[in-house]
Image (cartoon, rainbow, N blue to C red; front, side, top):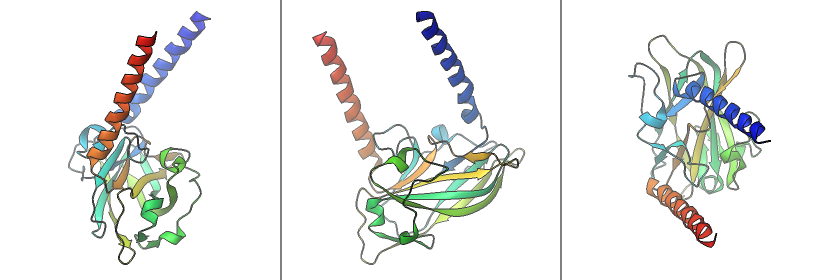
Length: 230
């Protein structure tokens, strides 16, 4: 039995090692950025390149995401979507909002919030935001065809224009989350890894970091308690 467990652990480790370079070295996928990466020789990994990339937090909307915080939602802003290797045809930007954001937003890129779909997304679900208790709904915006040109990454700049309800005050827990997907020439699905998506929030990044640190400290305290009692 111990030998079987050891073999399974070894196989799992080898499988994990073989998968990691696919994203790290630019395998077929889409990546989000808060700043334009088109000047780079190759498409950089936002985890190590984007100044607004956030690691693991307690919030599924923000964890492992390019996290941009702002209280000024009346001003249009840009996000960049890059295609690494091959092509992404009929690329779609998926815009997801939570309940707090739905209460103050009238439309995003001209799409009325009342038209947002409130069921889970068939291609992207299940993951974080769609399983979240605060999930309100989503809509899709066509981006077109993206290609990885030889020697330079192909990046699409996407403008996001939010129209608020008259007199609306944005609550601190309002969030707008972005995912993307497309298809290769052979019809295979291409999307951004769930560890590399994009979230637009109001709270300062320190709020998420503080929460993450608090939970980590609690876990460490619990572990110590168990060791003492043992």
